[in-house]
Amino acid sequence: MTAMSGSPVSASRISLVSPSLLVSLTATPWLSAIVGFKAAGDLLERLGVASEEVFRGDRLPVLHFSDRHEDIDAPGNRSES
Image (tube, rainbow, N blue to C red; front, side):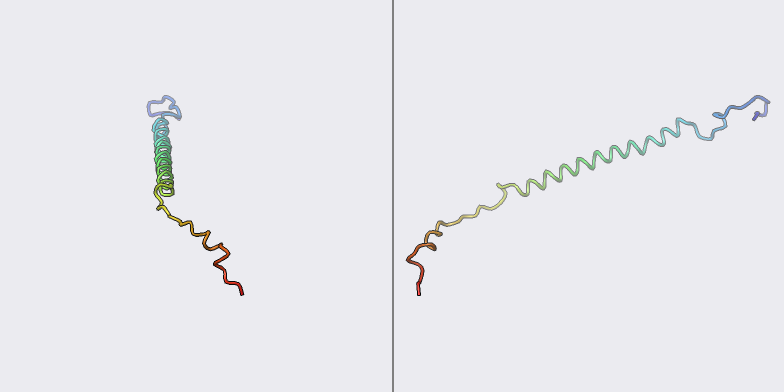
């Protein structure tokens, strides 16, 4: 190929889009994805910690049991027929 002046034109000059623009256009989605995955991972980690807090023992109510199980097993309380 020759330009209007008659000198040969290289293939890089014929290119409609420069390679540096192509690299920057492909790098932007990759960097956005990396930042997005990092943010999603941090969010999931915080949700996991919050869900563990729900099941901690000090947040649950205290159940008081009486020691009356001896009265149930006593031989005088059974009615024998």
